Length: 564
Image (tube, rainbow, N blue to C red; front, side, top):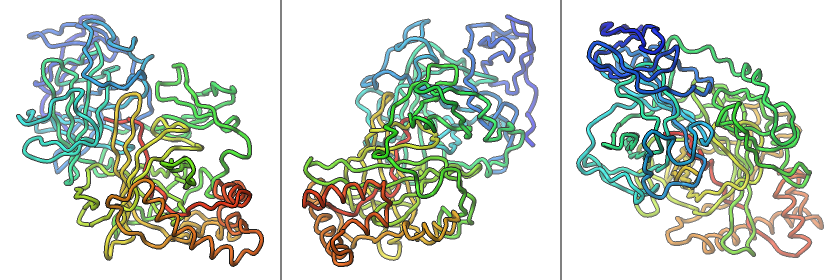
């Protein structure tokens, strides 16, 4: 258990008289736990400089007083900053904070499009760090001096760029406009609640993540960290958050009024079971809930082949990873967006999996077969059409635009139907041909973001066994992988689809030879009568045209800008 190096300071809150303690002599600010006054140390007294807003209760397992260890040194969580993304248009230049006001976009919580936490971790050796949320996982980062060669944090910085900082190469993962919503506990500097600012994430091939933080108008702050699992930190004193207790929030669907029952502590959006509307709850239950309607008719979306809520035991990690129970909590249908409107569309399905201590993963069902991926903290090293990540070489096979066509379940980012992304798929080379990489770039209301995911292929029989699917439904999980394709090089857009079309023709001829007059029987047996593939086949049969079978994102996805 962590022990404070010394109880360096204690004084009464000048507003309400409650005791305020500082565990570190270096801490300059705190927020009173009783009246939420923002306090700064002024000699031997405390001076009140403002009031912090109410924290949005996001049911995080972390809380003040929780303690753990990192690299053999104990630490305690002593403070929290809660940030949010404004829901207005994306920033194209550095915003100008307004003195004493709420900044562009109006009030703090009401105008935000999602929140995330950064916890102030005080180590027993006196060092401070930040434990922050990152794509359903966590990053532990330490403040450092801003490198002289760091890129300027302004409108010219964009996701996808390669930049230098501290003599090292970094990929810009996201550039977003954010705002400090509320603060809690002991902090190394006074929190600023007076406007929007730019924040940028940088990642490299070593798995590091760096942050350029413009919350202080006097100087850009710089921090460097790495991904961590809560289990690795040996945390004690966590909040007692049971997943199903969140249903007590009694949320009414803003579309039809039916009761919504979010079961995950990290849920940012979920689908109404009655009208299928996708409801955004990222701003809190008390806020006005936004929603996106989805057709509830039989010709739009279908029930997933692996039921929501089903748990399967899978080893989703590098070779040697122990199997763990993963629960299906969300389901997406996605498709590519052809460059030529006359070209056919390829569909695939993604299941969001959840584990209490390992975070999230994606199980992907494409026409080329099954695979899994998990978001990675770093950025693979890219050279031309190749990429290298953790000692494995990959080659790019497809680049295309994609969109979400159907949503069910719960998600830790603000997912919405018709959400688009630019996707590049990579396949491992040589003995690592079963490995997969996916890069997705999105543009949301808060800014732009690039997310990498890594994983491997799965056998359909292993998927069926893991989730205990009935033998009568297992045949529908089998896929016929398309023949391997060469690296795309300059073959993006129409050229790639021409190669895929040739592959499809070979596959469809084989299907026709087995199916007789009804050339869609095989497709219906494989994907189901309500699937996009079967509906497309029927349309093609009626028009005498054919489309391609292949592709799939291998789990590419967008977090929608839900992390710092």
